[in-house]
Length: 482
Ligand code: NCD
Image (cartoon, rainbow, N blue to C red; front, top):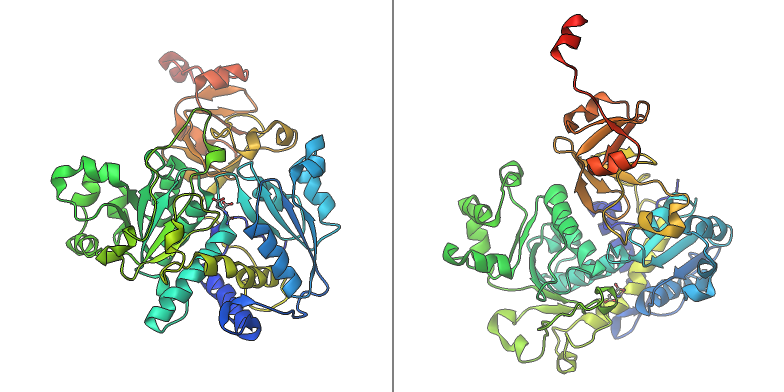
């Protein structure tokens, strides 16, 4: 199978660095003079290849920079920029669309409102699929552009290059951390590279539960936002916000709440937190209005202007934004040398050239043979528990015709499942056998059941609705009669 790029976790840190080195090379060879971030001209690297962009949500930068990237490499593009002009408006499923498209293009770039849509696409085609944003879930190629921009800015400051410069950066993630897909992928990547993440959400727009859980489980990171810090008022907390990758994961993994997080930090860790005196980068995001529930509103959205940047501790802070902006970045900082969001957008071209070249294997040795494997066991069954996220691709009428729910078992003791498409987690309370249609609430039994026979339900109500019956407890006399 060719490699796809659906989640930021599908590239290892070394592979990300290899992609960045290829982007460096494109810039060295093709950048406009005086504008080291802008590619000009064409090479012939991809002249035999076609890239398809299929976008079911609005886009300017992502789609056009992918298309420019392919054209700059001498390749060709086919594009569907509007879902209304594609057969999805006639009810065509994602699986069918990509099985058709793979006959026309060598690589497919997809943006879709359903969370997990790009994962589905990658499972039904034999050409690489690139996730250009799936609902509020992830936007991994934006993250590559963000990391690359930080790497260049920070490297220039330190006279260094390479992803190592991301380690120990203090990065503030601002705005809509709940619905913004760019900040989700970016948080995972920063955690992996060892940066310190300082979440500064708009009121009510903190990281959603599934993101916090994934950060904690997969990277041992525990974000605390302003509200939680305020609740710790007598804990003399030195920073507004804190996000840690602990040095002693097992110790921290047991922590039940935020007070404990602070109290159980080692002296060294507490010192590290106190040491957060400067901010290396602000990553501002717009309110994702299109993803709010009807009637939902957000007041006091945090903005950055020249007055804000006058604070001493932001003297060397860089300002990034995936764009488009609305009111969260004032136009009066555009000429400030700390503002690097337009360079960030420009880097979309060399970074996406490098990614496409790597996935199409136009450049050898950028990627390993296979994507990094998950450490969790998988559970899947056509019946039983459904994903709890109503925006998940598995919950959509069109896709339900063929899609079977699939989960990672992220906690084997409490039987917690993570949807393999959208990452939402849920605990299951009922374990049953498809062969007997009997269930039990003693979830520890799941290990005794053959994986093909195992059916999990969220609760007893769902099991009964599906025609399952509670397993009778064996009475003492029945047991002794044996
Ligand atoms: C972002 C997106 O689409 O998620 N834009 C982008 O791809 N550069 C951010 C946004 O729309 O706010």
